[in-house]
Each structure stands twice: as structure tokens, then as C-alpha cells.
Amino acid sequence: MHGTSAPIGAARRGPVTGEPHIVHHADENPTLVALTAAGLGICLVPRLGRGPLPAGVAEVALEPAPVRVLYALWRADATGRPSITETVRMLQAHGAGPDSHAPR
Image 1: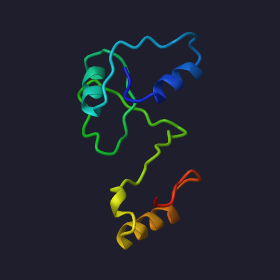
Image 2: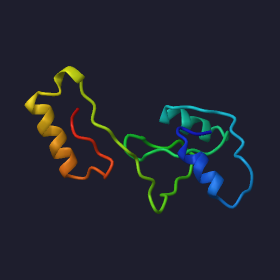
Image 3: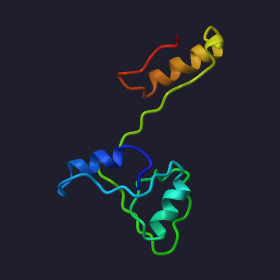
């Protein structure tokens, strides 16, 4: 069970040989948590916005923590707006990675 391809990559690099046996796929975190609570696998979910865990579900923080790539999106016909240009500039100045892109 997985929400993204990150668990698949982690499983392939782990001590168990062979491909992981995926039975369920879900994109919504509450669904992933519910499947895990039902005993149907494990999942990786972000702590932010997760909510309380059901009884019987254990959690462990991953170290090092996985990195999530975020993108700023806007309507293409609004690229010249000063508010968009400044917001993207500030995002890039405060934590954007090396593959960041300027407004196009």
C-alpha cells in the first residue's frame, strides 16, 4: 500500500529482496491510515494534517526525514503580476532548492 513512489524506492533499497507486494493504492492520507488500521499494510504519511491515529496504529519518525518537493503554481496569463513575481522571488530566496524555476 502506498501513496507515492517513495515507499517503493525505500523497499527496493531495503534488506528484503524482490519487489514489494502491493495490494492497495490510495492517494488520500485518511484512506492510507484506515487501511493500515485494518491490518492491510503499512504506509508513509506526513505528520502535518494527519490527525489522531486510530487505536492500535503505531508511528515512528523516519530519520533522515523524507524530502517533499513543492512547486508554486499560478495561471500563465498572470505571470507579469507584481504580487506573483514577488511571492515566487521570496519563496526562492527562503528555502527553494537548486531546481527552482523563476516565473515563466
